[in-house]
Image (cartoon, rainbow, N blue to C red; front, side, top):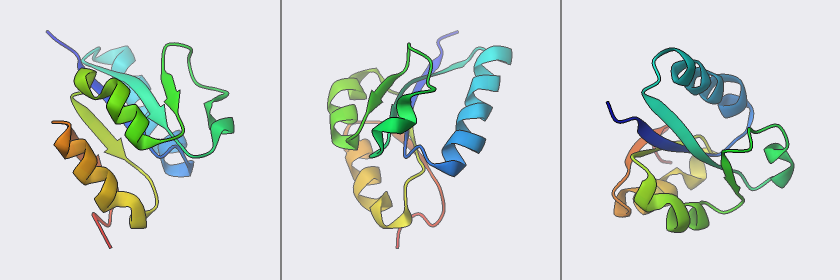
Length: 104
């Protein structure tokens, strides 16, 4: 079985305390998903990430460098940025999971 490869865009409270721990648990128990990259505008949020996860401060750079290796992105930024990020990820051929609201 091939693992789904994903990235989290926006690594604030919701992502660090909800999304990422859930993916880690899924990686440990089901072994069917890998988070390969995380993006946040605050570089200090990278300090506690595992070494095998690439960190980006710009979502477009993440998509440019990792997009061909991604199956999905999980968008957990502030709502005002959702539409722009969603459209960019879809253009790269990624499936998109997005926090609500989908767009403002």
